[in-house]
Length: 195
Image (cartoon, rainbow, N blue to C red):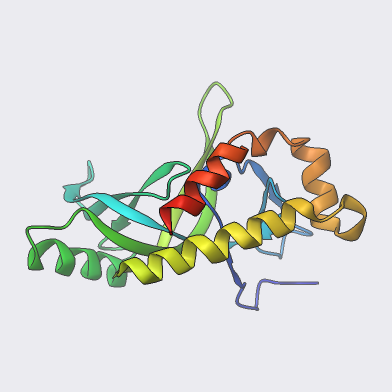
């Protein structure tokens, strides 16, 4: 099926799992590239949430303005940027937040964005999040995101490989190693964070 003309659904993903995502899937050259997350979900676009710990204005080497932000969800954290020329809506939102309050960060936030990967000269694969939407939320919204995302993640993990092509592929590609972050204590920490 050609997905290039269809808007891809947003998948809720914990940051630790997103950072372990290294496998790209494209059925043919006309399709968009989706990424196989270790628990067995194909994702082009993800929703992450947590605590915004850094937000600041920066410039690229070619004088393009951008905002850089860092968000953590209790499993790990990720830094992403919004360039004024590529992501004007997110850039404007981050600028508005930065200029409107001296107390942010820290704050609770949700970020929706496209997943991408890149490799260094040594062949290490890194994950990038290209933000499409960014917003500050209250504790209740953050807690709902954590609960829903944890539930979806555990549901994928408990799905037997024979019941889902994506789960079977994730089992073949990652062999469970992409879920090393998911320990009983890690799940308990997330559950405790929302109680």
